[in-house]
Length: 266
Image (cartoon, rainbow, N blue to C red; front, side):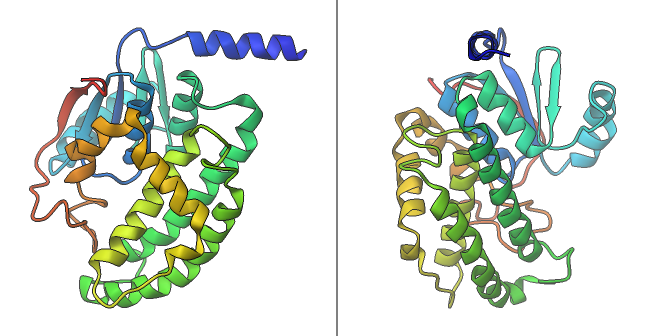
């Protein structure tokens, strides 16, 4: 197909803006939902922020999941509902929103997608120490030592991502979907080191990642997000099980499921 045809298809998709607010469903934590929420906020699109909490068993497993599995057999958290379209799986949600909202560029598809996958590799390693399920870090008392070990491996992931930054963002002058996941990973690692006694890590070894993190924090489109509870007080990880909540969460509460319309321009 000709470049003109491909550009026409991309334009039609970009112009198919959301006629009504989509719904972004995830746990009432930052986790894998944070990059998706950030991307929606960056776009300026209002969205329903469906956040499952202490009543997850009733609200997600017994109620919403059975209804959504009929529309998408892969259904999991996070998911996005956009009219008749239901998309799930973290990277697919980010790629869908990035393209639908004209944030991702076709020319950078593979560079952006590879960075997303690298961020997920880093996150998968991180999950082994913030939750007890893998047996790597069985309780909170073991977390500082487990974090120190994790950071040695994380340096390899950060090194790859550092080399991938074209500047100031991963694919150049503007953020694309992978930048939102990368920001969350850098932000959580910075918080863990800062809030865990006796643990140090030289983030100065990754100046491009530090600059990207600062550039994301400075984006005016994200100012409302960074002031919201989604960023300031929701736990980094599932509050019922994790070894690391984040100082903003404090003692909670984790609460109950909510479904609130969030307008980034309000």
